[in-house]
Length: 347
Ligand SMILES: Nc1ncnc2c1ncn2[C@@H]1O[C@H](COP(=O)(O)OP(=O)(O)OP(=O)(O)O)[C@@H](O)[C@H]1O
Ligand SMILES: [Mg+2]
Image 1 (cartoon, rainbow, N blue to C red):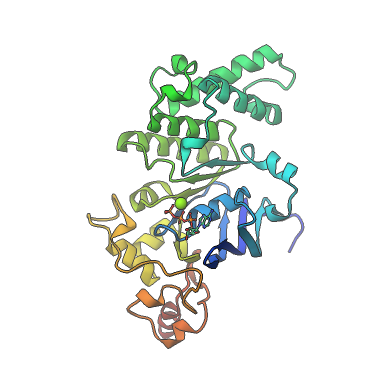
Image 2: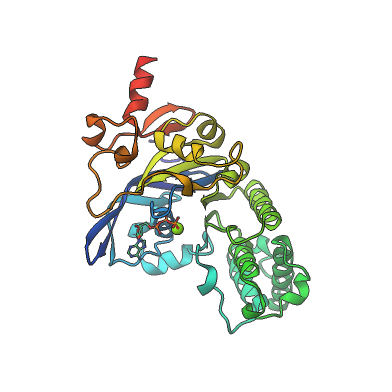
């Protein structure tokens, strides 16, 4: 490989994560491969408990070890394996280069500080690293920087749909509703223009029109600043409208991935097909993954081979022998299913 090749923004390779519990060690991530380039918005979908949040948290190395253990694999951010970085190097990446919006937003705003102060602090920190974020010269005075940071905070708050943004900057978190706090956290994650944003169910708590506004903001920023995004969601409608690519997870494996248009129009893995069939309304709007028959397997003693086999109408003894490899179907679309392999061979 040529040394000048620019590495992908995010390159997760063969990631295995186990989680200790009283009942034993659960194999919760079972060989995740995922590459996100700048300008791409990847949707990460799958039923509850399949490992989406743990995948997202692992990228910023926010999973406690123990009880978790990274048994194998790499998480390369701009070529560097975050699993091997020191904690101080990791802290420099978090927020500034890798932004996070967490699934549980209740813990992430400091109740003692006004919203504006918290946003301004993040903007100032980002401005030290990348002065263009504040629109100022590197030598600008600290008062000019503070004013620019406050103006940026107001703009971002406005962009995530908080009315009277200028006044609301002086309010404390408890003066905001849950949905508004979530929007503040989205503004906070985006204000420093991280190269990679990992957003875990960022719009689930928001009403439909605010959700659309936030997702437009996100897609606009991805285009303008060539960010990459990993968007964890249950909602296939959001994926269809917002994402360029999608990865479908089942019980700790990515079973299918590729460009959204290709995966949603021509799903190749029986699990993806079942997910799409479970959507109650026409097309892929308002998709919800809860309607699928059967349950996700026990991850302490997972079924051998394909973890979906016990729920799959097409499964045979071969599916229970080994974890199926990802079969490439062209243009980045792939599915980890032996039945896909036999279909492509037959074609
Ligand atoms: N801190 C933890 N300790 C023990 N087990 C955990 C912990 N966090 C997650 N798990 C387990 O790991 C598995 C994957 O969890 P994860 O939170 O990543 O799922 P998810 O796909 O994000 O689900 P959801 O859609 O409900 O958010 C689950 O079986 C969960 O119970
Ligand atoms: Mg989750």
